[in-house]
Image (cartoon, rainbow, N blue to C red; front, side, top):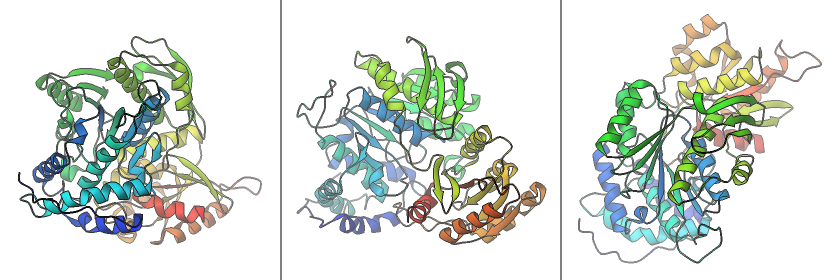
Length: 483
């Protein structure tokens, strides 16, 4: 590909100016409409920038549920072992810079602005090339690797040695895997890591587990090391076959065989873990809650062990425990209080995630019912989601989000239409419903309902309010609660 010669960099005065520059790229056709073109375009962009994604070891995550949690825990574990770690997440909850983290903190706005300004000539040349302009997400991935490659290295001993680049990148796929903009790494030492695979984005990835798994398994490259959560047979067979085709080394993490004695608490979970070639770990304290988070942590620890083995190192139990006890992640059963009401905020947005959330709620609050505040993105399997949620609902408040900061067009399901679509389920569950399109008003309404609910006695706290259905709603929720 021949690019037009770049002219000059751009200097953005501040983050707002940089964000304004990026906005038009949010409305370009991407993976959903032109998957092959989108990936080839990203490869052309990365090539023009010097293929920085191949300058650093990468652990690449795909899956349906648990990617963000597993990636965050894994990055923290590696950092606790003295490594300088880049973390790429998507989507973000509150701020775009959450997507690009170095050693547990979002990159500075000044660094973001500088790096983007230096990329502008290449982006401009791409616009005038055979590929056309890259999408917002494609730019953000390229920008991530640029910032990771330019960060000062800490070295394996944790001391700043002046070498450019982080020591390892933990990168979460955006959607699927095979055609995702993150799937440009060609290093043979890449680790492909798979969290639990289930049904989501079926309009893009396919309507069977086999088809969905085939899209996820597309991140496996020749000679890679592969670690997967034990999948349903239909998905597991696809990963095994892809590993054989790519001559990749496969390891399997079976949570049922590896994790034992799980104890749930409102703000943390304690569990035992047994990994091959390592002494059993007892009473690990993870500062997230839910059985699913214990499983995510177990997978992350196994991935950390695999990466450290490649460096000729082993897990350090003290470092591991220190990291697990200090994980912070917004929108994952996050507890808040507002107007004397108890809130649990969780971005569960498909049936698999909703099952995990509801299982955790039942484990923590047996025989309790909840006021649910729910907004869904258009196209979600609402019947499967509400089949999980309604058995625990005392009252349901349907709302919608208005999120214009994710770098792509987003459409929330109209709450009035949603009420009609789930009417039969509501009748069968005998759950009353309120429609309140405004998020702030929906939260206020939830407080009133919770305080008046018959489950709340004069001497008892109001019943909990669970805000869920989409990560895209949570920025508005946190804005209200923080105010």
